[in-house]
Length: 102
Image (cartoon, rainbow, N blue to C red; front, top):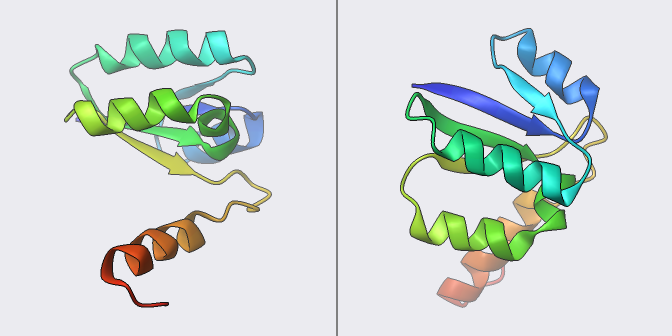
């Protein structure tokens, strides 16, 4: 089982290639969804890494896939600018679920 990256920028792609993760760069919603659909059919891919900007292009579709598909795991990663608030988002979900502000 392997990782695959779908990125909106070459810097993230090159960085992950240094550790052996292959991927592609896409810039449009249509291209992103085509690559995602194709890679979800590849049984050798266990985890698809997707940059935040691409997830933001179609959050409804990504959420539906995450809820309905067991494999592959789709994981959002911040790009090199690191302006994603993924950790804060997760904290918000947890605090809502347990009723305690983190």
